[in-house]
Structure formats: structure tokens, C-alpha cells
Amino acid sequence: MGMRSIGANTRADIPSEPLPRRHVVFAVVAIALFMASMDQTIVATGLNAIQSDLGAELTWSGWTITIYSLGQIIAMPMAGKLGDHFGRKKVFLTAVVIFTAASLACGFANNIYVLVALRAVQALGGGAFMPSATGIIADHYGPARDRAVGMFTSIFPIGGILGPILGGVFVTYSSWRTIFFVNVPIGLVLLVLGWKLIGATPGKPAERIDVRGLLLLALLMLTTMYGLTNLDHGLTSPWFAAPVVCGAVFAYLFVRHTLRARAPFIPLQLLRGKGFGAMNVLNLLFGGAAIGFGALVPLYAEERFHLDPLAAGMVLTARGAGVICVAALAVLTLRKLGCRLPMLVGFVLITTGFALMAFPPPNTNGYLWLMMAAGITGVGMGVSVPASNNAGLQLAPDQIASIAGLRGMFRQSGSIIAVSVMTAVAANSAHPAMTQAHGFVVLSVLLVAAVPLIFTIPDHRGSW
Image (cartoon, rainbow, N blue to C red):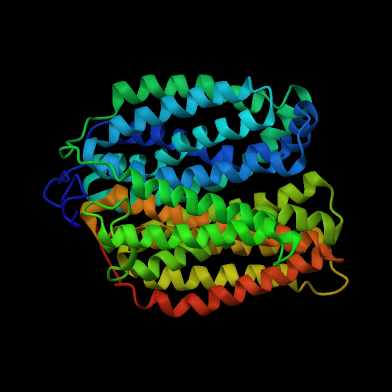
């Protein structure tokens, strides 16, 4: 399948004027994105309760988090492709149904294996929200679609911040099952509002879904993730080596299939086409930094600075506040500054924030220092994300949802790699906090090394 055949909308298909009720539609899809982002972090505070109630090992309890990321990796590019073909509204409403039903079932799970499997199903619905919502907003906002899509930047930090807080409240005053039950009424409301308010968009005739490519990618990610979680057994351990070798085999089979297939699951042009290779690498590193290492900041705060859990969680609040404060302004300046400069400034700020976390000055208040460093990191995210989102989308404006899905896939992959490697290495360290500080330094070096890639991406001003 060629580049042109993937997108449901070309430049000529996109409305020249914004559609009515676009702000209400934005609110509807924003709630869905918020719900999906919150469920990435809300379970973290309930791990001990889940482990105790279901009699599970901590390893399997932790998979309730990692399997959610894996499910989203698979769902995002598939949902983007389906949205381009069959219409964004249909895919969005289907995602709401899957997410809501799976949340209800998770609340009734009676053993950890069933819960992990249901979390994977829930992730398929949650992962489908972003690409379908991106397409819906692009269809409704016309020439202002770049700014509207950029505003999504502020939704995910809010969900990520409130997730652990709400999870703690539910676990403390009710049960870990409430973490999942709370999604049900919200999902039902979204289903009704989405059905009535979101306009239908034309879709292209359905083509055969690349089931083999999807299966190979799923096996590649599953085996690699399992191997990384067993890194603490050592590089020569069969628990690490065997899954990684299997992952390498599946990677070879996936690449070979992609090169030969007539309609591959992920079109090769979106992996190595002009500008796409650089964007995919940047998204992978950004996911490792912002989503992966960011989730480990509270643990770092507790172990190195001896903060209590509430204070450690508030560090992420500072990061989220930094994102929100500048995201809207960054969106408004895209047409004047282009994409390269905000991405460059954002990466520098993220790197600076991580360096400050790793090398705090002596005799300073650890809480305030971490709040400042996290705030700087958040500002960097707020500056760079709208620009990087639009930089990818403008590379192929007729494949909006597919590109949004691919972007999410690489960011989630970076998150899984960062968390799996860092936790495994820290678990075998005599000084876990300092090991994590060294991890911040390593990631900062990688981000700096990736800066030249920004200059290989076409600088874009105006609407894509």
C-alpha cells in the first residue's frame, strides 16, 4: 500500500473552515485521552493492594503496568490505519466500548493472570484514543487543526499527575477495584456524547488487515519486554537471553515481512521515509525520558532524598505544571517559529532538568531542588511536544491518524525500555538511588547526541 492510499483525508478533503461544535467535540475526545493517560499511572499506587488481595507475586503485579504500555503500542498504529480507512468516529466509539467493558471486567478479576490479560484488552481501547482523536480534531478544526492537536499536549501530563493521587485515594478509602470501576460511568457518558456530537468522516474502502505483521510486532515487543524485566538475573541467564534471542528472531521476521508484504501493518515509508527515521528515533528517546524515567522520579526522590510518598509524588506535579504553563503558548508560536527551534530548546531544557536531578548541590533542600529540576523538565516537554507532534504530521498530511499512532508506538516503546532496564539495573545495585542518578546522566547524553537529528527534519511554518 502506498503512502497516498493510507490516509482518509487529503489536503483537499480537509474542511477549509472549522466545523460547528468543534470545541464540544474537543472536550469529548480530551476526556477520553485524559482517561487513557490516567490509567497508565493510576494502577501504580494499587500494586501492593493487588498483590495482597490476589496473592500474586510482585513481578506479575508489575505487569499490570507494563502490559498496558505494550497494548497501546500495538493499538496505536492499528487504530490509526483503521481510522483512516473506516472513519475516525467509528474507531473512537469502538475504543470507548472496549476500554469501558475491559475496565468493568478488570474490577471483577479474581486472579492476577486474568487481570493482566484484561489490562491488555483495556490498553487496546486506550491506545486507540490518540490516533482517532487526532483525526477527529483535524477534521473539525480546519486551518486551526495544528493548534488544536498541539493542545493535546497538556492533557497527558494532567492524567499522569492525577493518576497516582486518585489511585492512592481509591486504595485508601475504598478498594483497588474502584480504580477500574470509575472508568465505567465516564465511558458510558463518552459513548453517548461521541455518538451524538462527533461528525462522521469519510473512509476509504476496507483493505485486508496485515494480521501477520501485527502478530509479529506483538511477539517482538512481548518477548523483548519480558527479557528486559529479567535483566536482574544477568546477561547470561536463560531467563534474559532466551526471550531476547526470540525477540531478535521476531524482529528479523517482522522486517522481512514488512519489506515483502503488499500492505504491511506499518508502511515502510513511515519508518524510513524522508524525516520519518529521525522523528521515530526522537520519539523513542522522548518516550524513554518523559514517560519512562519520569515515572521513576518519585522512587528516586524517596530513596535519595528520603521524601515521603506524598512529597515525592508532588515532584511530578511540578513537572506537569511546567508542561501546562508553556504548552498553550508553544502551540500559538508554532507558525512563527517553526518546529526545529522549539524542539531544540525543549530537548536542551529536558536534558538540563535531568542533569540537575542527578547532580544536586550539597546542603540544599532536596524537595525544592527536585521540584525546580522537574519544573524545568516539564517546561522542556511543553515546548517540544507540540512542535514534534506537528513536525511528524506535516511530513505526510494525508496520513494524520497513522502517523499519530506510530508516534505513540515509539514513545511507549521508549518508556518500556527505560523502565525495564533502569529497574533491573537498580535492583542489583548496592546504591539504587545513585544508579538511577547515573541513568539520568546516560539519558541526558543520549538526548544531546540526538539533537543533530532535529536539523534533518523539514522546518515547517503554518498549517500542515
